[in-house]
Image (cartoon, rainbow, N blue to C red; front, side, top):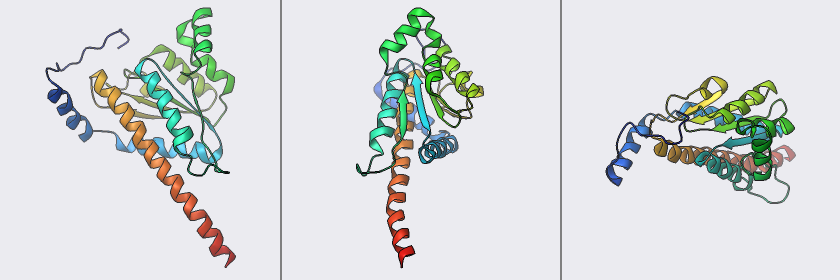
Length: 213
């Protein structure tokens, strides 16, 4: 699963065939694991812990995208609202290339993580195969620091499954389908989180008003 190119077990000869595969995947999505991940992200939000997100290639783009959604998309009131503490380890290109050049590529995320991670933080790893060495090393570093680990992957979960406290595995062996659903899953989680925060912000003033009565 660590080769440069992934070949689907099912050949795609038309756009229709590609999108027909979606129906099969949607029917078997791990909704329970998504709910668990949402609860863990909300716990980190409420307790002021930091969420570190990382991945390679398309997963790097997804990591930065999800960090943006959580950091900005959950801001409903710009004045005084609690905010997510989120860092995409994919965004510091100089630091990644320094670690890759001076040591090895496998350490680009784990070494960054060791500068900041503390007990109770969340390491959110994204990998289509679940076997990317630098992602696995970062998950190990997070565990050593007693942070919670969440994995978002595909195929059978790869080695990531055993290093994640919560693992959302897209039930597909097509890398493009997996990456598509990674974005959909993070959007679904973000949408639920934003709604929960919005509802809590509405309830708090009402509760305060009722207490004053």
